Length: 205
Image (cartoon, rainbow, N blue to C red):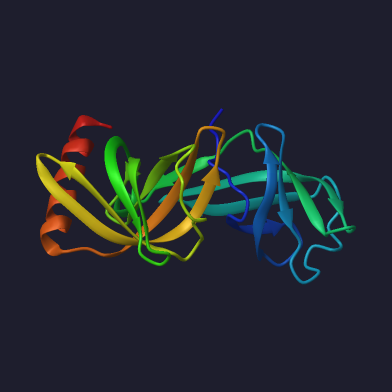
């Protein structure tokens, strides 16, 4: 079964049969069972269980679309809609934003809060951004969404650096995963990144 890479707060467009489509976001999920979305401004308040619906969401350069049904709704303490996890998911990869898996030792500088983490690793990368893994036990101030950070590493025997904005943060048992969207990059580094991605694409990474 195709799976969606879900996380809380992910925007999603929901269209329930007989209702106007509405933008909302993911509240929670249980893989292969259900997806929970929030009702926005009372939209969906008259939606009932077993209603047919479709949904569309974009995550890290991948568009997911699927048809499903409403399992249940609740109004208190928060208005929520439970969607059945779809048996079939259509996936469209946006090449410009495609993430490539890597494992590049890196140095992470939080320019907003003025601290450096010398032991980190870039785990995936695209022309638009990257995901950085910071190991558990690293002593640093809290990283916040919206912080401007510089990431630097060696690739193909050359130095690369770029500034990015923190878009999301995921805490796990062993590491903190930080998603960056590049906001500033020298042309020589952009050319280096483009060359690396061309190699990764040729390798089918």
